[in-house]
Image 1 (cartoon, rainbow, N blue to C red):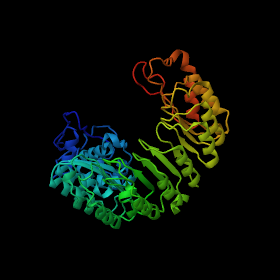
Image 2 (cartoon, rainbow, N blue to C red):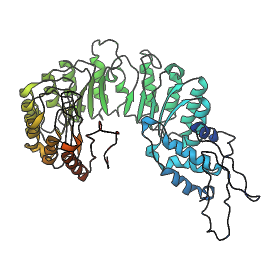
Image 3 (spheres, rainbow, N blue to C red):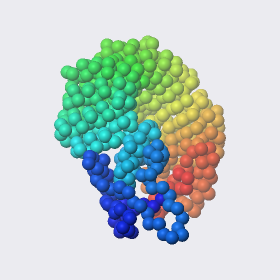
Image 4 (cartoon, rainbow, N blue to C red):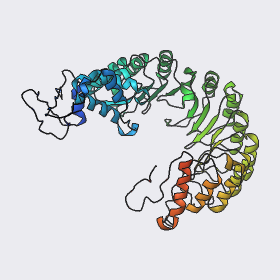
Length: 492
């Protein structure tokens, strides 16, 4: 195929029979303008110069069937969600390369539905242009930074162009008042297949305590398949609106947005526990768990389905109440402890007796010694263990031996021991002693007294660790970032 690159500008060899090509520079805004009507004339057609004795030229991009061009676009490199829509840029590049590929660009997002996540902001013109080309294939949409009512209108038009296929809708911007609740509700009504809705911001910016229940009720009718709902609220979702969404997967008792602790609204929590019969996890954050709350949870019908129990951030729960929850949740297999939890050896003995089916244990930021670790590894058949950011008393060969000499060594598949003072030789002993271990998360402590790994002395152990991890389908880890350029190891 013969073509003219988009940048930098170059002279194109032409003849009387060769139409001139208009070349543009390649910033993203030019790609966006190329989508607007009327389109900018870019590379409408470039006919190669045929020299005597030369081989027949390959077809030009705009001569390919639209289905094939769309398939080519579907294989373009995706982009991590945190860095912006690189896939979108590639599709815009395809559009800029040939005006006649506009239909191919429209089809391409539908060929790769799992990657079709778009973030919208900026001008109303750019939002409208994106909607015209990519709206039909969009399944996941985040928006924020809307600057005018015209932007809100363009956003609503974008959602309409998804033809009801949107699954994820997320408001992430700081200027919430520019997207009124009525507009957000209309977008929800245009998305009956929505399973995940998130509206971030301080309480009252879009949704207030006065209209929260009305909004939640209307959304639950418009989007009956919602499984994850995060709305602005004065208390936790389970206390304020979650009972409106019976397909919710998590009983969320997180009070992240609460200005004042206030008493727990037990009646609404009980209503949520009765309504959300499909939940598989329960989460506590910024809340003090009480005996009455535990009684409601373990007595609810959904208790037999709850597999995950998570305490995060400033959740407060006594060891006795954690044991009551563990004993009352028959399906419990995943447990995350509150930060700075210190239950002692007797607590862990009681835990493995109360719920021996736990396979995922998160003790990050907790306080546990070698004896407690040994009790856990002897009593549970763990597949994942998180000991990161633990106290300095859990380190060295004794901690490694507590794991590799227990039945847990035969089942462990991943472990996080970041910022614990282990030497590479000890980590190698761990990886060798756990034949299924494929994921090892470790970084050296940020302590000046901890000796840094030496590429000369520790290189053989590091190579052996990474070879074992890769042979089990895992990824190599970097030990020597502080030496020279920060380059990840081969195969990382």
